[in-house]
Length: 80
Image 1 (cartoon, helix red, strand yellow):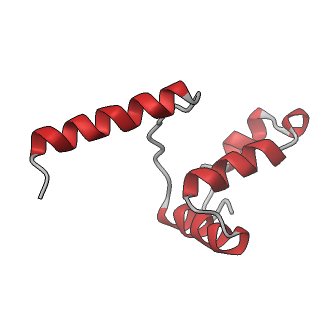
Image 2 (cartoon, helix red, strand yellow; image 1 turned 180 degrees about the vertical axis):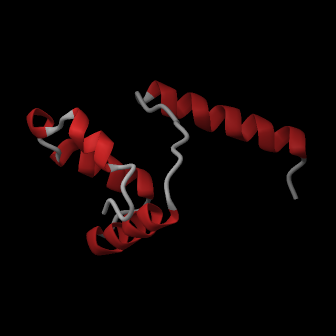
């Protein structure tokens, strides 16, 4: 089993490779229903990760149609 020190070094190398590829890790706080929706989309799309699903959704979004009202809707129950 890898030591905690070598695991930390492995993680650092992985983060550096991702940064070099233009990727940045973020933490998102999501309701469990939203995570379940991501997982359903992941399966439907054959994506390998939730990150892939999120990137596809962002790429597909019509940014001209987004408004502050869309964000306000998120505080309503069952925003899906």
